[in-house]
Image (cartoon, rainbow, N blue to C red; front, side, top):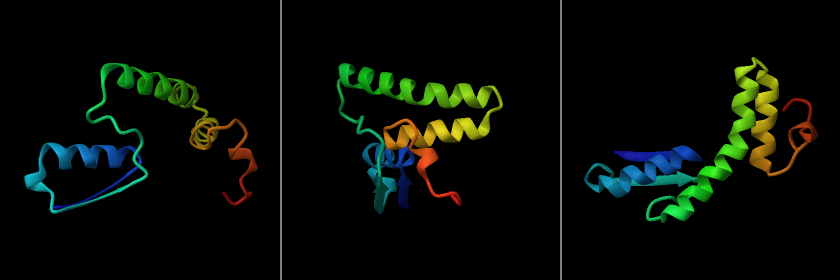
Length: 92
């Protein structure tokens, strides 16, 4: 296959290409999240802590039914700063 992945999907696509190169004719990985293949346990733990700190508030807001709040937290986390979502143009 010609495999395409974006963000965390890019990580999954890279993993498939590494594990099963016989199945992948080409790979396009756009904005991979965190390169975990070949990482040691300390690096994996660091990435897991970072992901929990970022996604924890997103999932909590979603669990409470606050979808706009979950999206805002996701966008703020992507930007790496609180308030980033609120500074987007109104149509966004």
